[in-house]
Image (cartoon, rainbow, N blue to C red; front, side):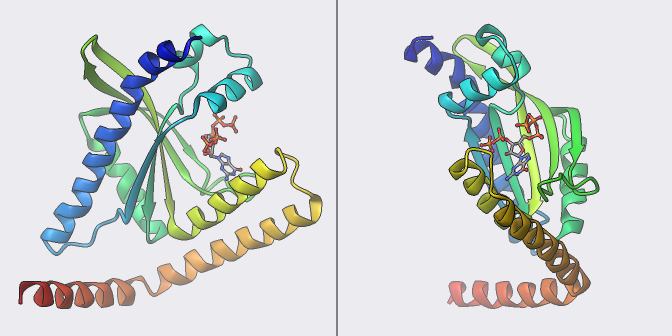
Length: 212
Ligand code: 0O2
């Protein structure tokens, strides 16, 4: 496929990611402005690189003219939460929205992957409008805690470095690190109220200073 054609095919995906990042960031701002705790700490978005689309399509035996239908994570949103409990709130929020339709969910938190990967995936259909009309775009929304994100980001780079063949010893250490992440998330949940209280006080102080 020519590069211009790739650009045209991926344009609605870029639009979907841009719009969704704005919408989820708006939730953070709305919460902050009304002094309410935000279940969303941060939002990231990306469109899969052409090389990664080609690699995944080949690995899954997907023909190039089918990739927009059969690859459901070309458009990706990552929602980072502070606490495990927030993940469920974000999932409920997504399910209740009328601008996106949930088509599937994958719970890698209750069902941790063999690698140690934990995250909640919600796949949605999201409509965007471009000059060529409307497009129903598949978007994969990954929801995870800051600790889960730390682990997944590092494991992802190691997986890339070792081309999916992470040496056994290193895999063992990653597995132990995943256990530590689980323990950290539990510990933080246990003192959640204290932390949220402290953050609220800190935010109030910061806004008083800003007003002066
Ligand atoms: P990238 O670069 O993040 O886009 P698969 O066949 O395993 O690739 P599938 O069946 O399409 O994936 O869906 P799944 O399991 O929901 O995984 C899709 C995405 O979840 C991956 O995208 C990763 O972002 C993340 N993920 C899944 N498993 C792991 C894991 O063990 N470790 C880490 N770090 N991330 C994981 P891509 O395309 O692999 O990568």
